[in-house]
Length: 337
Ligand code: GH3
Ligand code: MG
Ligand code: MG
Ligand code: MG
Ligand code: MG
Image (cartoon, rainbow, N blue to C red):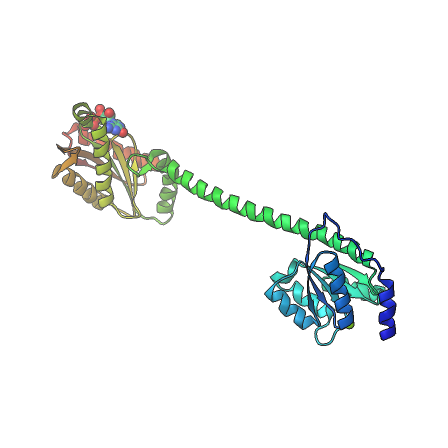
């Protein structure tokens, strides 16, 4: 044993290899049960500029990896308790160990042995006794892969961040695209895209569906007498009133300037008329206050319920619109169905 050690020492070149400038220091774990070999290898790696930890067997190595995963492991095969192959298999089974570059030290470089080494998950092997320049060359090969993996991970993290930002941007853009800027209600474009879905669901489940078309009476007068800004405030307040009388499942949409559409899922005509009547009465029964002015406004509302004659949600909306037209024609501040 002492002779073979001497022999090995002699095979290590007398001049220590120069650390290469372009090679950055690696965090290496040396796993070797023979103390003298362990120390020799540790010293050699330190001379090459690496940061070295040591373990005397597979179990010790495994625990060190869990605490502080190295970039590279150089492990002996024959060791008491947990041997080299067992260690590699264990490391490959945990996230901390999957990315480690593993070099096996082996005396037997026959086919069976090497096949077992690689199938356990090792990346490379070095035959003992270790020729220092071979060690250096194989570390360099390992380093290339370690650096490549690291830059891949960094790119992945960057991509993931970009994706998250994109999806947030996307959500905000989507919200902005489907919302009316003045009132915060859905806009017409969104309603016309979304409503066919509601329509199909109601048809399939054979549930009623009703529509309210609302138009503020003589709204032009508000603008003409008090200005566009006051008109805008009134529209916002009116949107607030609509929200007050609607359920979360109702779709309230600003259909045009001072024209609004409300779709009431699972609602029959009689109930829809009640909702419309409450909205109408609320507006008629109170003054809107905007910029210190108290304004009395009314609204006309057309109501319709989905029936077999309606071929699409557009037909239902048209029916509500026709009812609205009747409400306007018969004196305004009215609900017509
Ligand atoms: P009617 O009872 O027949 O509905 O009379 P009206 O004056 O309400 O109807 P008309 O369609 O003639 O006028 C609607 C007015 O709504 C005209 C337009 O200036 C105003 N309007 C439309 N959009 C906005 C808006 O975003 N802000 C303000 N302030 N006014 C708007
Ligand atoms: Mg051994
Ligand atoms: Mg009009
Ligand atoms: Mg109007
Ligand atoms: Mg109008």
